[in-house]
Image 1 (cartoon, rainbow, N blue to C red):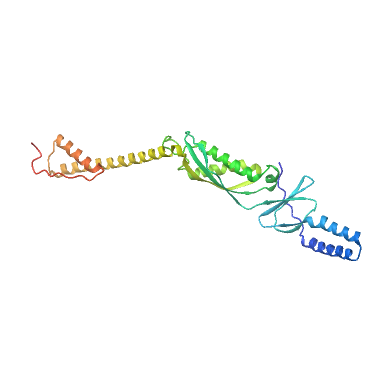
Image 2: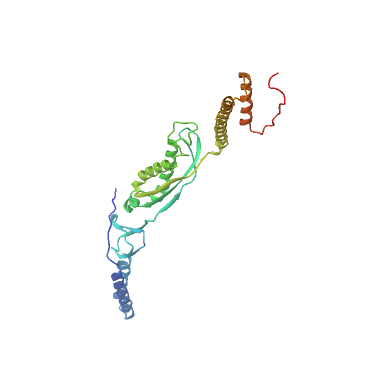
Length: 285
């Protein structure tokens, strides 16, 4: 596997100045009817000098190969002169965003879900990106999708069915993103790619089970709310009976206590407002 070799070629301004002088000399020779001399000067100038001049923009690299052999990489920005026979391949060092497509995959429990991720990456080693893979941009796309699929298979969507799950795709966003970034870094290292950030951008149940899962979530929420209401109502009834007994306001036998508890629970736990009935007579027949 090729390792990146950084080279620092000389400035191209002097060579470009000499190129202009040779160009002027060749044209002058042609004007003065020195056709062979002028043609040779112009040919040498255009073939052997001009191709050796390169311009490197900021956050850009030129990978140089000579007769099939890797020569080095120019990462400095500016105007340079290199061997005119080298093949120069431009590689961008800027950060790239990969907005992954939504894919359907099964989570750890076999539930079909839709998932997608956003990956921020950049080329770190130009030699690997150029020579180790055929197309490093396509390689990033395919490996990112494979990593997202593998991650979805490791964890459940939520902990409704697996209460012992410490990490879920829905609630463990930070841990899941860290694991995704780690796996992508390992997969893309072969291509000399550095992963700057990786996060899930979309997560949902597949349409065929989304309705059923929504009903399950709603039922769970209703049960939890009812449980809290009942616990509060029982506490209030207990407090009411204790205060009545403490103050000695009224003496209730077990049957009347049961009736009072039943009425209070209906009032406190009911979904609708109750209509009170005023009893003007005695509590006892």
